[in-house]
Length: 539
Ligand code: MSP
Image (cartoon, rainbow, N blue to C red; front, side, top):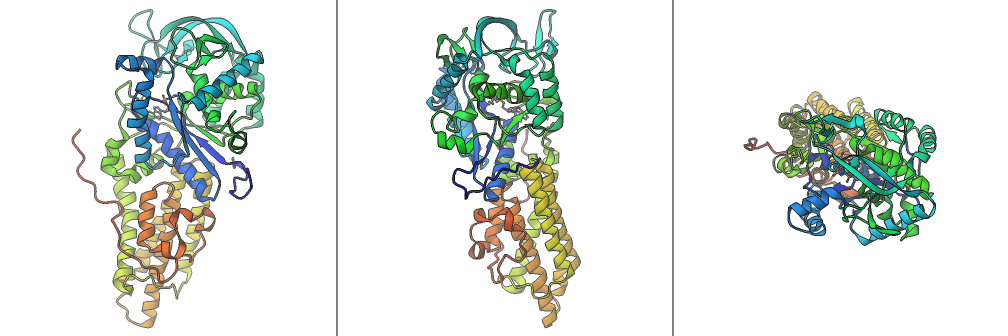
């Protein structure tokens, strides 16, 4: 499970920890489902940055194909105009709003992409991996994919068949086009999966892919000649490249393939491709086969996440169930949003969003357990020590137990978030620690100890408050990848910056070193981290 590659920032040209999201179709605006994967990748990469690793996080947009072309037509603009507008007005602003710290944003209509894609496919053509043939079959424009009989549902009439994902009629496509010899790679793919058991995750997704490849893998139609919104085939300009073949290559074109060999060597192969389960086959079968054909190394892992569901169906704009992330962030705030979906839904399984569940977690976990702890500790340091953090002069077993709890939380969170992509488990481990600190305060009753004016009583009070503040210092570091603004507010209120430097410079390696927060730090009450929620807005 663990990735043993050294991604340290010190080695010259050491491989970076490279994570990608799918590139999103810009036929419409983003909804919760798209943001789910992008936030997950952001937390993962922020975690690795906090380990001190060299990291590269890529996202972007998929702008070719029939779906985009038809949407642009319907809106009376060119596909390029449509994409430019949506990317600038909807997609990029959302990622900024959600504090996504991506290192690059690739658009498939950019020269740096299309030129390299043409070279890539020309190379495969020259090697005899691509040939001309004919194909006919049911095609779903929503998926931009030919469908197998098992993937169709009956429609309203005897002849009508529906795509099982979009519940919309498929179209019959009959074309002469170019094919990639995908079938020739079945054996090599199966060997690769066997030699790399962690390549596809979770296990259920892996099994599905194995079954698919073990059956009868067909060659892949990779060009279209009935429309022109795509990358022209360099050897036959009457055809454009099938949108998926173009799109998958974003992972290498953005990383410098064919343009910047040094950077490419540093970035490729990617550490993790994050994908939704509906696009797993493209990433775990077609993409690896294309890379094998080109003689390039394969990504290390493809990790599939489940779907956000509404009323038992995949949330989607085309089914009019897409909810805009800003509908939720305006009520709960960005950090709570980032927290909620990763905490509430085990990564890899489907999950439903509910306003009630979000509200309940916000109130009990964020506002009560965490936010109140932070404000109580700051208030007591203010009240009993004039805001100057006292030293822990009388530590005993109870304090040691808190330090041990921290070490345990750090080890668990590092493994779960950093390696296993078990975000829910990792966040739960951090919140177990928060709970432990709350329990510690309840047991130690500093508000009662404060009534004891003796030297011993003062020493005890100082120790309790130092312990709680030090625990919060560590919590701010651990939660920084998940809730960066909240962690920063806490960092500032603890006065940690003066003694320890910027929060962004803290590392996973030192977070459990007990006693880092210097005594004498100026603790201030600061902003309330999770204010009481307003009434739910009317639907
Ligand atoms: N453009 C392709 C991906 C190309 S990657 C080389 C595509 N785009 S998409 O916009 O339709 O979907 C992008 C991602 O969003 C997919 O991983 C998909 O699973 C995810 N989601 C779309 N709706 C979703 C939910 N309701 N829930 C979770 N993720 C879902 O496919």
